[in-house]
Amino acid sequence: MVNSSPAVAAHAEGEEIEVLESTDVLPVAPEDYDPENSGFISTERFRDLLAAHGSELDPHKLEVLLALADGNADGKICYQDFVNLVSSEDELEMSNKRSNSFRRAILQGSRQLRNSALREEVGLGLSRRLVRHVAYETLPREVDRKWYFDSYNYCPPPWLMLAITIAEVVVFMYYGFQLNRWVLQVSSPYFLKGPLPYHPQLRAQAWRYLSYIFMHAGIEHLGLNMAMQLLVGVPLEMVHGALRIGLVYVCGVLAGSLAVSVTDMTAPVVGSSGGVYALVSAHLANVVMNWSGMKCQFKLFRMAMALVCMSVEFGRAVWLRFYPPAFPPCPNPSFVAHLGGVAVGLTLGVVVLQNYEQRLQEQSLFWIFFSVYTLFILCGIFWNIFAYSLLDVKLPPPP
Image 1: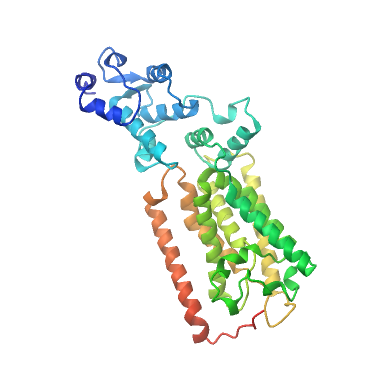
Image 2: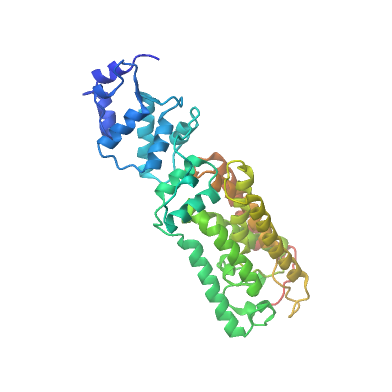
């Protein structure tokens, strides 16, 4: 390699020192470099410098940064590796998601962390064990698992999925007492009269395309959705944040109601299955695509159980849709919202969950799927405005 350390030392008070100062990291004196002027510093020496100057890096973060800097996995860091490391850390300070330069740094060479795996750590408290469990449930790479383990501090907590679930339970309890019915509430004549469920006669009330998630056909419907929402949605929110998971969830909900309005035009919609199926299908697809990297225990059995739960809930919805309605001519709620959620999960959702280490706005695939989704939403809006009258659809009377 070209001898680079004399140039660094010669410009210590010039341009090179400005680069270091601009990143607010520890200055490295010329004598700290390799005495043979090879242009390298050992990772052990670099670790000693950080410790000596009181750097406040967590142990796992230090390991990740050293692995990133050591492009040849040979225990040495050259000056350019150090600059790449500093740039990556600065970008991480500004955002929880890593940028393209950080991703390139990961992909350069074979970086293998030298410490033991995160799973082998002992003496962790309950909260930290939960974070470690979530990391192995959702992330396929050890480097990401360690980074997440050191970065996550429950602030903010996974409030979105919990808030939606609590709201659904409160609404269900309210209607349970109002209707004096807990199983198959949909069979009550007053079930669809509220302001929340989607009904084709009331499709001009735009909020119903989202608010229908707070109504459920019965306790069996709420129970299955709530279980999947908490067991899958909360861990995903802990890792990816409320903004990303909320995006997938809301897109699944909206796609579900619009899919019903396009394909099952006379049916109402209730339940959070569109959003739940978007999250669960995205997570299962991510597990399959990263099968060897996913280290969660009993993953085959648990994936099979998730598919069984989804199939049972979908089968219940199909049965209910074609079961003779209690108050014809209004049919029972549609099952098509489930399929709309799955479509969102397998496209937009997979892109979101696959890119823990990168900002979504830097992903071309994200913009492709988001553009397709936006086009679908626009087509669905125009369909609801014009198609019903053009096709002369015979709608059930309003509730």
